[in-house]
Length: 333
Image (cartoon, rainbow, N blue to C red; front, side):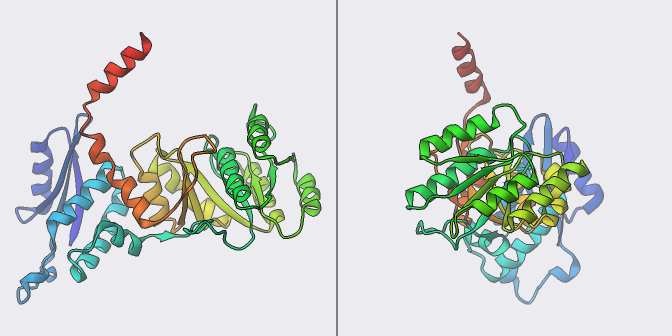
């Protein structure tokens, strides 16, 4: 089965494009109208896709339509959408009534730093990396909070010494947890502090946001990760452009990233960047973070949580945009 999303200024133009490329045999899976643009996802079955001797095995297009609508809404890149729908089609052939979260469980990987029962995985040295403003410092504080509540005393290091207010923010969090913060400015200091750290403890390293296109900044981050001799975890905010994160996936894989933490999940309702990183980058979803408060605890990544994130926009669409406009006017007085 061939899938493609067509974009146009009207539904008529979009359908004309569908017929022009796929012909009259095209099957419309979903339509989405938003921001003066219409998106139509269509499918065309190849001749060998038909199984006339077993019509029960035909594709459940209604369910596929829902998947297409979800992926289109979240602006998942088209090539990834098509691959995902192909995988889902195969899964639905075997189990037509399979729940959404069960399908996601088969497609994506989930590996929390803290398991569902609240017990920690083996002692680890973790460095959080990602773009500037990703929420790494807040996430470090939340991880430290989880460790403290379980009776551990993590060793927290920050390399983010040059951005205004970065150390102050993390110091406030650490003071609230009763933990010292070890600030280092270069690799030599990092080695010294690591040598002085307690044996058999959790080590959390907050790295500065870097420009992935600057070799000197990449080199610094590479040295820091090698010096730590631990695991690099990618942290990035929800709402990031999917194509931007896709461009950097090779870089992060080269730095040894295998897991990701999505931050600011409460400030957006589009998760195309998350889908791209999970599918194209083959990263495991470790945790979801919402809110800057320590009390807003990290949620362990699993297929149920991912399903909730991807489908919650259906409720948001029920709220007219003018309602938000009225609220804004009221707040402004």
